[in-house]
Length: 132
Image 1: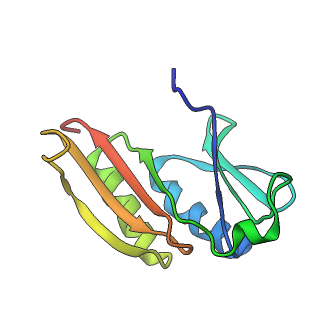
Image 2: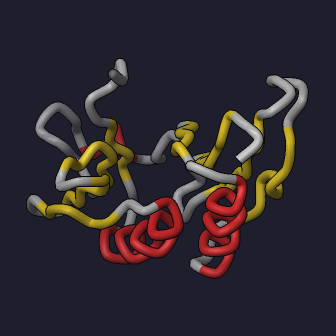
């Protein structure tokens, strides 16, 4: 069982970011599951565990969002091919390279990941922890 039930990233342009993540998460088998106002939930098996939202949220002021503070988020991939496809889809959707697909032995011998800066500068990654 995962420690985290879901996570949200705040974005500057909801429609643009929603289109970006629809394309980027498809190679990982994730899809847009639900929308709630200016928030979109993505995941597997009808369970949204990754959200994007255009703020402010109920606990934020408009000043909290300017500028958006980038975060790092790693998505689970089931194979190296999924990591490669994630990276290609993200570049095609307007993401910026932050580390092409490859082994990262400084983390561990089978760590295979790719890093992208999304449309708001969030550092997103797809990673598989094995030879797959």
